[in-house]
Image 1 (cartoon, helix red, strand yellow):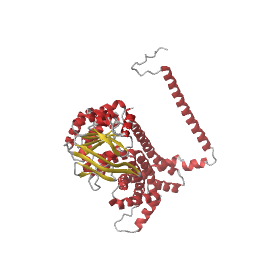
Image 2 (spheres, helix red, strand yellow; image 1 turned 90 degrees about the horizontal axis):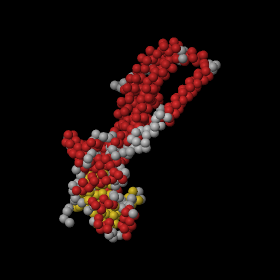
Image 3 (cartoon, chains in turn brown, purple; image 1 turned 90 degrees about the vertical axis):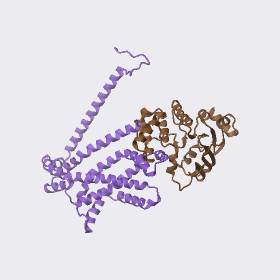
Image 4 (cartoon, chains in turn green, yellow; image 1 turned 135 degrees about the vertical axis):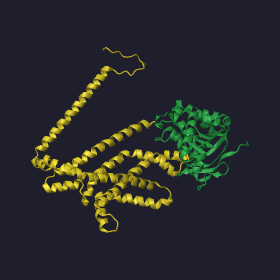
Length: 247
Length: 289
């Protein structure tokens, strides 16, 4: 492959108190790739995503963005990195005291100092792209879970990130609403955005992933193209996990 | 029965008229029983109190209509000073206590001295009774005879109320800041907002909204505690009542002063209840998101 590496995590360790969550994990993400993280709860998927944009500090190892920016360097200005990495959480985390459009406009206005008119136009454009233009002036408590999660995606996109992290974004949703959120992710993937996604939606992972990584006890135990990981896994533990989630 | 039950699945909100009539009758009966019980209770209490041996004297010295009418205008005039103290103290308390609360949430090690100062301030002024703070400031500072420092008791009384109440209100604000879920802070930081911007745009607006009911409660309390300034001598409503009472040996003026406070605090209390009810409704509506 000739495409450049956008994200390179090497030997990442992270523990909470005495509980080791990441145990020397390696992960490489290439530009325009969609990497899907699968694995049981507690295998380190969420923690890894939080370490990538510096919401959690790592205990050892390095995470390098774009070849030269070390996220894990304690002296680095994390605010600058976070502008380039978007993250969407399982629980949406919209700001309940702001309307949808204000949620979307907040960081362009305050972080990149985009003029109000331009920020509004760009926000409306994004909302339209995800079928949310009629919700612009609603407060988050008036949205369905699927709408709220799509707004959260739009809010992260408003900073024009180079890398998007999705942390089990459909796990809190009514099964009927999962589809509309996955459609949004699919659309981003087609647009060429680089994506790292933790999910339990195996069908979607199989369809959209360029690479699937199976996390087990804080390391990537097995990785490869989806056909291989789902179709002919090398490790017994991967096989067991898939047998359990696919029923 | 003249009405008929609509077919199952009909797109109407059907309510059984018989059951509704029963419910209406029960509501009327409940209202009647409640009212009768209240009136009966009031009569019993009134009869019992009026039959105590000392009642005629108490009625004469505390509930004298002529005395009430004579002292009320003077008391109302004196009460303006209480209102003035309240109106000056309240906004200053709000700003000052918010600053204290924010100082206590600062993370950076360079702010340690400020954090320590704010903590000591809150510990000390929450620990000392308000009336003592008023005494110490009102009599102590003017006694220093410093050049350019005011000696006006109203000034020092108000300052003491501000210092004492700010310590309490700062804790209310701090609790409000703590009540905003950490995931809100995390979401804001993940969008590239700095700590300061996160506080300004995401945490504080939600924190302040969460503490409006307890804040109103503290306002009501402050409203009453303006009477404590009377220990320094200025003629506010309680002082005026004392003067009236000691010149006629009739305590009706105290009751009149109490009525004035109640006339102001009851609307404030109802307002606080209304705000609280409205906010909890809104929170329930928002609990889904």
